[in-house]
Image (cartoon, rainbow, N blue to C red; front, side, top):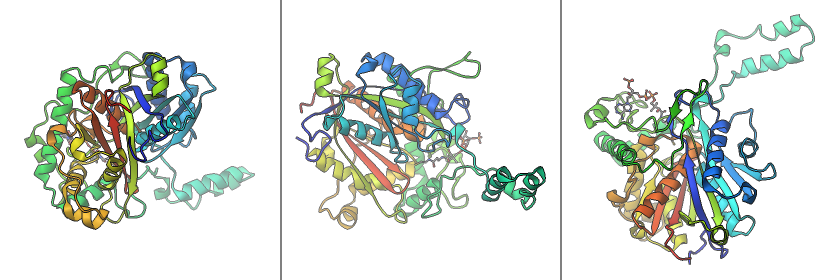
Length: 439
Ligand SMILES: CC(C)(COP(=O)(O)OP(=O)(O)OC[C@H]1O[C@@H](n2cnc3c(N)ncnc32)[C@H](O)[C@@H]1OP(=O)(O)O)[C@@H](O)C(=O)NCCC(=O)NCCS
């Protein structure tokens, strides 16, 4: 029985089904769709495919990392735009790139506590529809103008503006405490941990190879829905748009570093790209699944979140969260049939794998006598990861859970470990059981 795991209450949270949209580059096929629309699209299709009566759903937990100021509660908005009854309560979660891991663990907690029997969890992101802000002086002038009584006073509000104040301000992918972007933080980790450009490119190459192979062999067919592309709806988006079947190590090696142009190693090829997409899962108590005659994909066994000082290695959260989640699961890394580590950047994955295996890291950072261990490459991100598949921030966790559980079933495996690094120097780790593992 897991210690402090998600199934501690005696009720196990089963993952019944899941679905995602294709993941496409921001500004591509989904540029006319908002995150709410992407979320509602996947939720509607998932509810229809899962076959549980809409009236059986107790709650929806849904997230978005860069929310629109026009939608204050995406989770509830998704319910209201779906076939679910309007009485289904919902809450929105945000934990940066681990958002739909959080949605899933919230759903699992509600089930194990006995507060819900069927919960839908997921996330959606539209980086095509990221909010663009006005500069502070322009925003102030607009407020002043709206309060002014006469046309002359309205016009006066704008007289002190300089042309620079008129420029739109995009959302920053910068860490407020360090002032560094995620890419700059990955670059720093590559340098601190001695992760070479060649190792990063090789990792990215493998991600594309494996994702392309998964598509070719039909492994993704039933986990990715088709979406009619607005505004004309004449075309169908049916596959991920970022996977490159034809990527070569030579092509990757020729790309220029993006975040440190002179001495850097992190490129567009070994980073996850800015992506649009949505993903969702249906969770239910084991009893409810049995009563409805549903065969679970697997179970949430345990999870942990952890954090470190952002001025240390920002994207090293997985190395802190994974040991806690495994302890709570009562399992060792060597017992994992699959490990799925979110690929924000190849440098971040390779740095975390290095920390997993490092005695020094275990002793100095975790106060543990022994390292977690080496991850067998043949069990790691076996169908590709966010570098090749894309990374719609809030959808990635649900995509990983679905992809991993389906692969676990194909291998008749028992356990899988998932990790996600996130802004704020947070790490998430989740231990999943395959359907054959008894409570
Ligand atoms: C890295 C980043 C800046 C690149 O953005 P971009 O310049 O728009 O990227 P592109 O897709 O246009 O790629 C740039 C070039 O590399 C090429 N390229 C990218 N991946 C490639 C691959 N696998 N093989 C060969 N060429 C590749 C593209 O074809 C393009 O070439 P072109 O300029 O000749 O058209 C952007 O993806 C980014 O910010 N990523 C990080 C997102 C992030 O911080 N996420 C948070 C993680 S926690």
